[in-house]
Image (cartoon, rainbow, N blue to C red; front, side, top):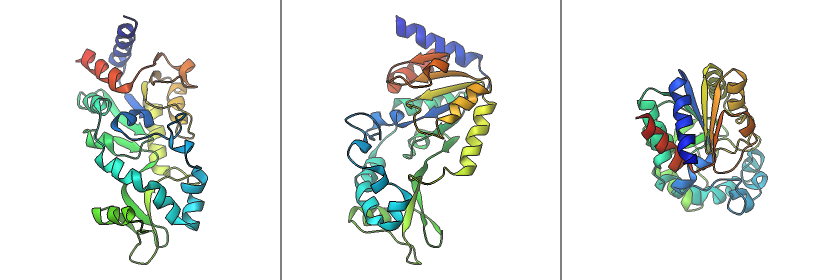
Length: 250
């Protein structure tokens, strides 16, 4: 009964909004089999020091370490399929309710689920850029096969091809970040789904929305530091909660 009240509360907030945005994090994709980075006992950083395997400095010094670390993720991301939470946000966009998704995820699952307006704060794996000549290329099966075999993918100039994901020590893509901030400040409702809101400056975006007068809904398994500033907090799994919200709206 308690959860039914929370679902109804979310529906009321959504129906009252004119410009709703969603902010999604790793918890939105873990039900699709993609591990997150910070969960106790299961996050990727429990096993590896991010500064040694996923920083721009380590990449430039020894890219082989990065590709050895990310090799298992190539297949995981390729084989993953969107879950009901991804489908729910795509449905909200199709209904004309959700204006854009701002995501910390690099797996492209929002797009695979049918969402069209997606801002990727931490980049994606669909393309790679040469760190020598800055030529950008599409990541194709041949490049993925090179990584699986332990080879470093290289540009035609001989430089190393770095996937278009943001590593530690790199700034977020300024154009995407500014667009996300603009959407947040324009919004009157922000839905945070599957994010612990611990990674800045990305986590500053929902805060900017609230400071601009937007209401906030948080759907996350664990409490966040932002809970006290939200109008509604639902501690539950996004794959359960978001489809129920969409069903109630329909």
